[in-house]
Amino acid sequence: MAPETAHDVVTKYHRAWTSGDIDGAMSCVADDISCRAPGGDLDGKDAYRSFIGGFAPMLTGIGDIAEFADGNRVALFYYPQTAATSTAPAAEFFMVTNGKISESVLIFDRLAYGPPRQD
Image (cartoon, rainbow, N blue to C red; front, side, top):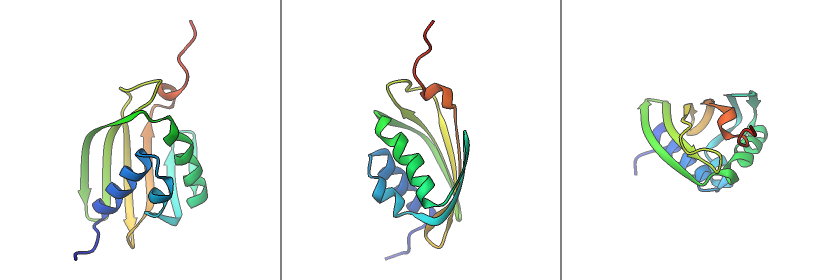
């Protein structure tokens, strides 16, 4: 059997967290992961787990847009669907080192996922 590619690792991670399997997702993440995310940087697996675990229960669906892979670098573009929005896109860029996600850059509009404005 061929070893997992970076794309395989990221796909496994993405499918796990978007279906609520946080333990499965974290099995793909390095202990010393660093993540740049709206609202602040996350360092280490515990901080990353807390961030992903806090958002995953809000998902009502996921709309895939595109995936790109180049060696140990993978980018995903998708629509995380929640009660607040189904049209706000998100993008993630991953670096995979030794079969684990070691770096992530996450881009999304935080305001789109908050409660609706009260006019």
